Length: 160
Image (cartoon, rainbow, N blue to C red; front, side, top):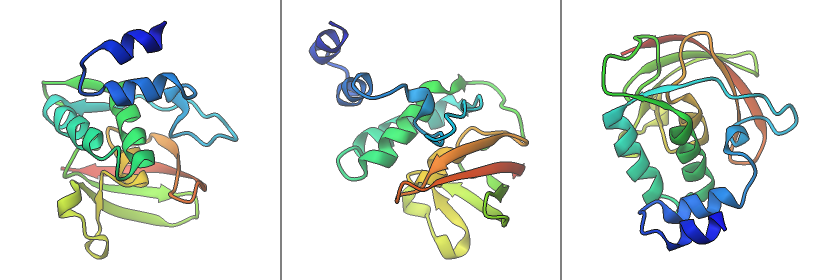
């Protein structure tokens, strides 16, 4: 019944919403399936939320796994039109994190057109970029790379 109602609506996100009703809980999409780790709370500013929702929706045909992961993160995010905590990862933030492979990394989260891996600018439309958005210092998240391998990272510092 829910799928029939959603399919009948004229929402621009209808395709995503219908797909979401046919897959497991979106609370676990980014999590390591073996551990079923609960995802940490995230916060995103309203302007970026709207822009990222449009970006991910338009990318569903090209990179469906990453687009769906980003949409899932956006769906669970607390959206704020006011000042955000300075230690939360937003678009344009430079983020230092510890990776599960023992390496410490620092990247800047950017829109796809600004990405340059050699310069440390990571697109939000990548698995790690989608996992980073909205996290705060001290939070950890499990995420899957493009090959389906689970990883974990912990945010050490955020600069905007």
